[in-house]
Image 1 (spheres, rainbow, N blue to C red):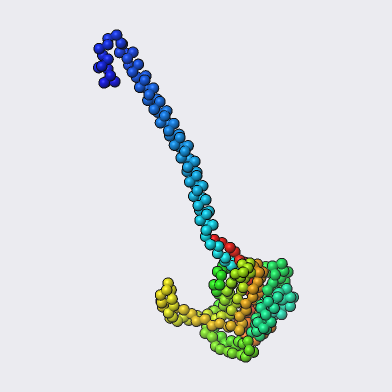
Image 2: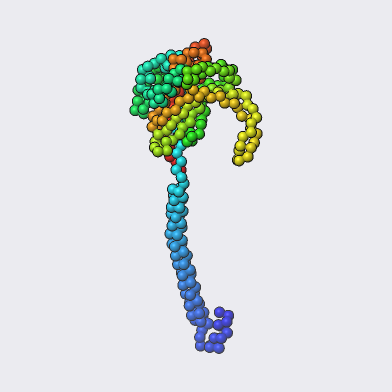
Length: 297
């Protein structure tokens, strides 16, 4: 306005008020148009930004799903473990219970070797569990309680069956029918379980059980960690290989591990692992395993 007004001030026939209106209106109109255009630009940016952002989210989601799909499938074994305690002879002498279980799945020689060492192992089908559970409930007078443990393919896991045991003397019946006995230091009596998935049929699991004693006292030993030797305090483990069992079962079938008739021998494996006293009364322990293969990424 300051630049235009001096140039037109020599025209006295044009009123100043009229000049103000004529000059301001075009400028005001131009400003309004600019504002509208600017506003329209913001709306377009917003409208175009929104789909691009949604597309970005969808792309991210698709990429995440694709990345997840690229991850390798890992099979793990979830084992539900039930433990029951009953007076001696309740389970070891109950043929009604063992009639529902297949003890020959491990082979006749292995089954006989387990029996000589005071152990009894049988496999039950998933469909027969209701009958077996009914028998166990009737024998114990209470419902079964269980815990679930996650195991990785081929990795041993130890289940403590008798804790803080004093020095023990155990005689083992070997596969050639000879006897071997030894004194073992104080420690924990454990049942070490190893579950291996069948590579040809992932719905089947090979379950291996091995009675072991883990000593309470530890000793220094050189072990390798991260490809370098280090000193570690480790316990001594004693294995009873003649009392080991191995059986291949379909996923969700179950295994019953209990004492046999030879468990009444004071120095048998079955007696030291599955028989204990409560206030002078002998009780026997029965383990029930339910392995199930689960696929995860």
